[in-house]
Amino acid sequence: MQVIATIDAFRQARAAFGPLGFVPTMGYLHAGHLSLVERARQAHGATAVSIFVNPTQFGPHEDFARYPRDMERDLRLLEGAGVDLVFAPAVGELYPEGFGTYILIPSADQVLEGAARPDHFSGVATVVCKLLNIVQPTRAYFGQKDAQQTVVVRQMVRDLNLPTTIVVAPTVREADGLAMSSRNTYLTPAQRTAAPVLYRGLLAAQARYAAGERDGEALRQTIREVLAREPLVRPEYVSVADPLTLRELVDLDHGALLSLAVRLGTVRLIDNLVLGPVDPKGSGNF
Image (cartoon, rainbow, N blue to C red):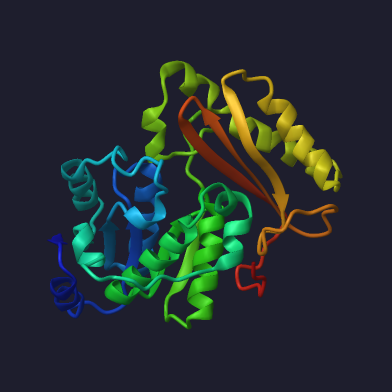
């Protein structure tokens, strides 16, 4: 496994490989990341992973400085998983002095995570575009847990005609249903016990949908009622939206994305489930 810190050196190493699967990460890896690596290896054999905590997607009062990092552990896990190339640049390598070009998807900032985290998706789209240009993967692999991110990245790839296919893999969960996330390490024992209520709320709405409920507000209220049973949980939003445009739905006549964000103390968690079929090549835009 080659661990590379500069763009020029990575491009030289990349030239030795043909089709390549790519998993972009911010490190502090867990089983969800490794499941994406395994998908990439099965599809391509050759696999690259990036480890980069991207400052441009963090707000001024968010957790960039304390975001969990453990490069040695991450590299051990990736070597054990059979990764060929690891791109682990310093911030100055991707954002040198004088950097001033960003990708904007303005309407993404108006809904869900975008409304809660101004400029977040500009940072996401910019760094993903840079990484795709550097790595030149055949396919790039993302987890469904960050549902809005996958919508933004797919739109960016489509709009800018980037020659990479975006693959979205199912959320990997702990035994009690909590979606795996590097930020779960922030939770106190009491908060960790309460956290699976996110998934229980989504499952309750999914069950109502399976029983025939098609009213969007009824499904939102079902999720809110489950969340209300956990006093440590403070909901930020509960959404039943079109899975391609993320516009809130009144009536569900096709697939929908159930999503939510909550706070447990200072820790912010998100989760989602998809109802019904979704065409990943659909033409929906924000």
